[in-house]
Image 1 (cartoon, one colour):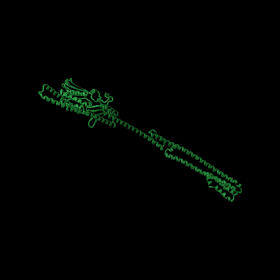
Image 2: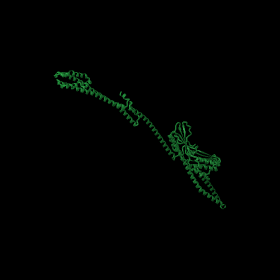
Image 3: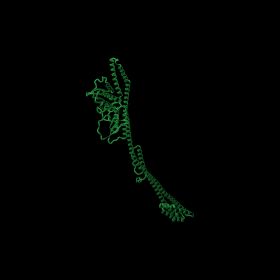
Image 4: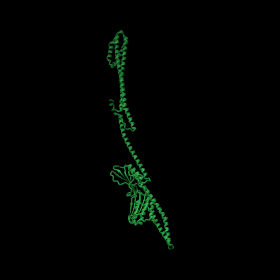
Length: 598
């Protein structure tokens, strides 16, 4: 009942009501006790008056016979008997009849008897009857006073019990409505402070504590949801940062590998492997152009299951694969402001996309690969320039020293021959032989000077061979066929110049001595060896051509030895001459499927 009574009220109103109840009980008790006390106080005056009447009665009895001076005693007795206090006390205690009977007895019996009596014994019985009536009235007043005192005591006991009950109720109420909810709220606040959002408070009612509990429960639920969202966001941000850090580490490692001195195959293998691990890109293929020649490319494709003999390298040209409708082919061009170095291809599953970070990572990697290829090309060009400058210096030295000496000797021999008949026949024959040898030496020196001054101006071996074939085609009057089957960037510039010289020397020999109508130049890759073959259908080389001072053949063999290879000049069974040079390139070659490059 109290719960239903107090529940609509707020805690402040409930506490105020309890205080007001306590105050009301106390005030009521004090008021009732005061009222009852006032009744007791009137009864005491009445009892005193009655006692005074008893004393005055005996005084009048002792004064019998009364004298004129005793009239005062009669008047005092009259005032006392008819006093206002006795009337009020009798009226309050319900003894008005007895008091009126006592007053009538006084006026009608005792007062006349006292005035007429001459002896005290004559009115003693009347006085005793009057005193007896006074005692009965006093006894009634005493009984009424005792009842009122008992009522005061009972009221005090009742009020004390009621106050005790109110105190017990207050303690229980404080524990139920304040202390326990407060402990629950404090426990929940402590749990929330320790990031435990699973606890809930159960406070019934509609007071402030219940409202605060509901608010804390709602706040805890919202904090749990917010904290969960924040944890997810932190986890996502951490994963993103870890992924970005992984991509930055990948780009840093890729930059180190791509700019190392290892062969391009070994540099690209781990880079493309890690790129596939970091992204959804698959079947990544890198095509490196032969000096902007998009038709002649070197392909690098990551094949996870391929067997590679060259230091675990898995970059090999692949067989053409049928179009895959479940993936999309992406392309990145390896270009800068001056040149095109190649193309990178990759497949991405349908419906998948590269994130912005992954796209930036791939773009940065493409820039790094482009920079690495540009540096490699610049280094090749620098090496080629160094070789050309060294050969040009040798050509200048030969022209300024041996050529001048041979010219001087030719002039001296000519001067001796001009003496003519003054010389003996044997001397003239010897001078003629010397002149022929000088002419032959001069021709060989001119060929050497031409060879040394020949520069590899074309960007790569293939364009240089094509240019030489076009040059000799114009000089021979028929096209010189070129079959070039080398992968790009296989032969370094310092070896490419020797290959070009050997090919030109073979073509020059065919031009001078073969009398051919068809010439074929082939450059192939087989069993990790490069083979240069120059074939013609002319008259064929003599068996002792090298021993008969054919310096062109000697020079070709010397250049083949410089390549650490082998040079063979032989007659063809179908007629003509065949020059075959085989050597192994200095740079480690990539691994290719099959035995030949196609």
